[in-house]
Length: 391
Ligand SMILES: *Cc1c(COP(=O)(O)O)cnc(C)c1O
Image 1 (cartoon, helix red, strand yellow):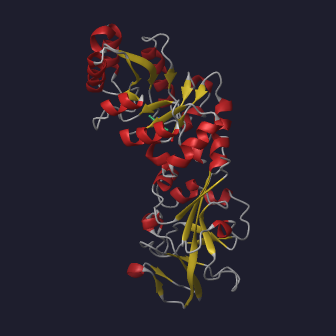
Image 2: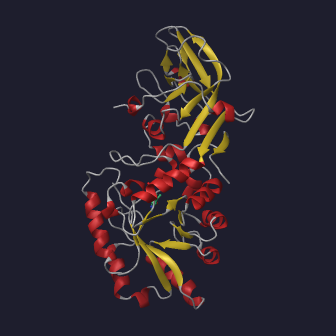
Image 3: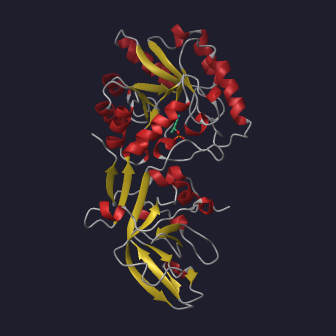
């Protein structure tokens, strides 16, 4: 099923045209109030568990410098980032928050994390040993999170290492103050997958070896699996930005991002003519093609191209859904506006690529990817407009 079919209300005229800085060919609008509301809506779902916020990768490409202060103001006091650079920015914006660094000590972040008071998420015995050495050389206890693997086989201490640590904590992790034990689910986007229960049981079994240490298992999709997955802290990222991570359990969040770009030209294309690089799409009727100032350099995946016989991505133009035709190129896409009234599409108008009923999931699905990749790859060329900032 094409997920676009579920959207009903495609309304006219883009509000972004008003917000667009003069000269911008494209605009990414980030609604900070919606992100704050989304966090609060998720936080209301999980008591007695607490709700953190994952703001790695520059807050999923939306701008951590703006997103983190909005979340602090909304009441969030626990943040997850990935790298030492991200830790520096997060600490400067959230001076009192608990900040966890998901990539651990790779990249020699140890000294940086100590200086910033950021807690690394330790996922290997090597990381555990290095954090211990830093602690003992300072004659101090250093706080950290311990990431254990329960079946994702990506990052996390294997069960045998977890048991060894539990048996001899003073030997294997002297000086480490474990503030959080976490694991990550592989298939939480599909509630019917048995892997969820298997990982839940493995997590309960292994964390029982560390009584009293706070626990965290769920990200955006795991949070929607139910309260038995919440433990002490949940770690949503994608849902904060309006993403629907779960295939069947909608999160109580609203879209927070829209992307629009200007129409640069409108052409009549007679039957038999082709449109775009490699001539992959051929008009079969007298067609009108609008050329829009957005391409793969702006984060429109080239896989959203639509050669003959294969659907690709869509835009909303003059309130109507219009299909991309031919290849997505670096700076441009071409869309078929033949169905629209002749005067509906004008050069200089904005077409919406995300927003106005086109979700980031729609954009991902039609390009053979997921909304996460769409968000984190939005380019740097478009103007960024932040709205809903009450500071
Ligand atoms: C990225 C990440 C999250 C957040 O995941 P979302 O699906 O965006 O909510 C949580 N935990 C870990 C370990 C992650 O890497």
